[in-house]
Length: 75
Image 1 (cartoon, helix red, strand yellow):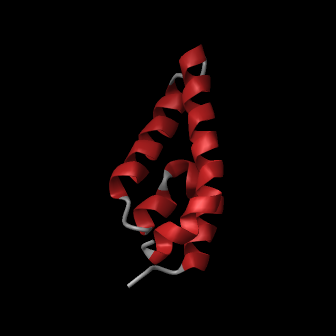
Image 2 (image 1 turned 30 degrees about the horizontal axis):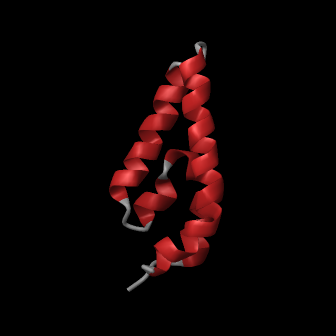
Image 3 (image 1 turned 120 degrees about the vertical axis):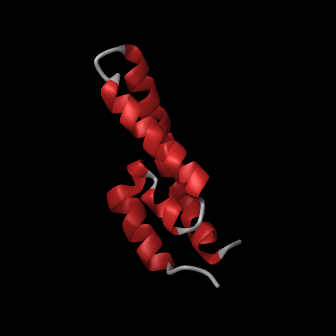
């Protein structure tokens, strides 16, 4: 059975950069990867690699706008 699409989008909007919405939808591995990218991006923000990591997370977060409904329903 699928998860709540509405709750998945609320999690995406407020905590999406941490991958919480993906973990809620059962995608633990990609959620942890998103969380790790955000943490390391924050740690290394003073140098260029941190900017790159956070840019990747930002693009991933935007793409998840279109993917979250499918993740929540199991499609």
